[in-house]
Length: 60
Image (cartoon, rainbow, N blue to C red; front, top):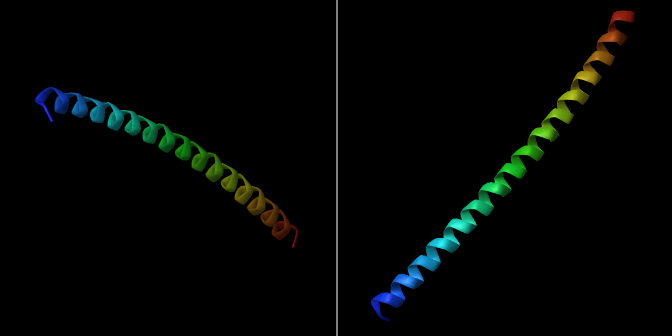
């Protein structure tokens, strides 16, 4: 393998590595956003349940 071929191979490898890294970063952002939405939904339901239970206890 010549020095030129090795340089080309290395440049291609760096480009592929960088591309894969940006895809991973985009995926992580998407997963984080989904997790935050889920946590918000769970929190809303917990508040709704606690409010309903509190109202029942206030009547007793």
